[in-house]
Length: 385
Image (cartoon, one colour):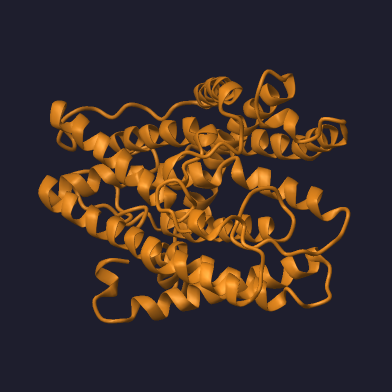
């Protein structure tokens, strides 16, 4: 499973499953579909198919939703994925862990490059839809976007490999052999967000948003991903997700809400200026610095809030949510097929883009989970997905 493995904390004694982590998987994978659907219907970003609709307010509304989503959701994926690496490594041993990791990440990655991405290209060509770039570029697995959303899987493979090299030099302490470090307080969390914002702003002076490297990597966002991968490992060592104090959760929630309220006003001011969105993508602009600081502060506060809220009120599952959590990785791999197909189906429908977005989004989420469940029911597939 992506964001591996079993939702159990590290330690000697068998602990109750952290079911809220499973439930967070459902939320965050749904946010991935929200992001790609918003791009389809006028939000900022690139995707396989962009609906040629209209509506003057649509780009701003979807830009607000998309930038808020982008501020934290992939970083959250990274954090949760890293959180379960250490317990999985300690439980399975290095050889088995590496084998399982290569199977569960490598095989779906190759399948996407070899099968899904070419299928989507053929689907767009058959429908007469404009391709986002030339076919040769679309199918190039190194310099083109052939990885699609699976760039994240490639990143996890690289990051996990780096961590394994680190543990070869400095093996992790056996569970319970060293005292746990306390969960950071609000000031430390805010300081981390501020520092991350400064680093991000510095990176974007030279690599503005929109810069893409090999494997569809977008380096303007990588300070967050790298930092949260390290935090996830550290959090697992100290069992920080086991219990979030209410006072910390409430404070982070208030900070997150304040940052969410600020965002549309700031974004409107930027988009209303003659230079437009380019002011916040990077370079030596005060707006770009403010945006990077807002983005990373929003990231750490929203993530802290969600972990607290879900651990307090959503640490339980029924049959449906249990199945959805198990299917989340498969949804990640196959949701482009569902979303692009639905988008093409509705392309000729005379509806405003926001109306299409409101219709296609819930359908894409529901059908992606349904398709994932069917795929995982096939013999042997659940060993990979």
